[in-house]
Image 1 (tube, rainbow, N blue to C red):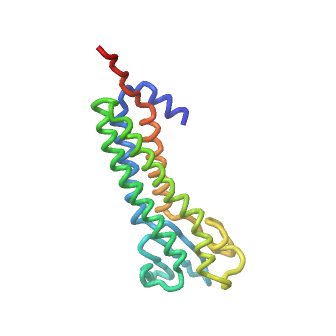
Image 2 (tube, rainbow, N blue to C red):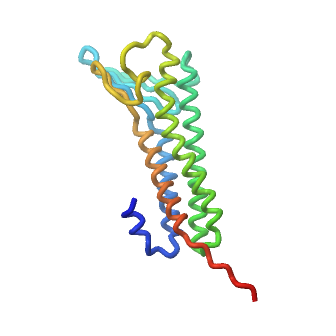
Image 3 (cartoon, helix red, strand yellow):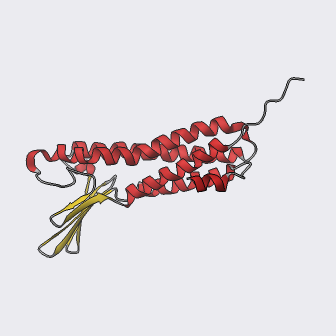
Amino acid sequence: MKLFVQLTRGLAAPGMLIAVFAVLGVVFMGMSLIMPWYNVKSSMLGVDVEANYDFQGVTSKAGGMSVSQKWSDAKGVDKTKGVYSLTQIMVILGLVMCVLLLIGGLMLRKGPGKKSLAMVFGVLALVFAMLGPVLFMVQHPGAVKSDSGTAVTGKGPWDSFTGSENNVTWGPGIGWIMGLLGFIFALLGFILVLRVKKPAATPPA
């Protein structure tokens, strides 16, 4: 982070760079909406089994076969569905705010007079982009455990966000990582907004 501050110290009007980071935030958050956010892999009797969870539902693969189930058709997993629905909303809001941050960055190219507006967009982009991955990481194990009831024992996705046990591994998918990267770029854009100097007040004549 110190290196980033040093590299941007000489930028008098970093509006274009703010816009670039906002675009990257939009791209990564947009990609996260179509990528799996969670992954469970296991090996049983020499057959590799994998389940990928995204905002649409679950895709299971085993022995060259693939089966998909939408969340709308899944029964008895209301808590888990709620986590994915809430996360999706946070990511979409973060994406929208990054678009507005992009506009704010472009406006700053014409001068620092619009810093306050860019600040608002930056704060909102930062908050929503952070809430998506963080809430998902915190709430996912508890939701899985609640939906599984007393049927689960030992370690598993109901016990921790990531881990492995008895040839079973579980953890975040590429979608969660993309969402986290979207947050990082939103953070970098917000830091640049903070570094923009407001124009000095014109003394009265």
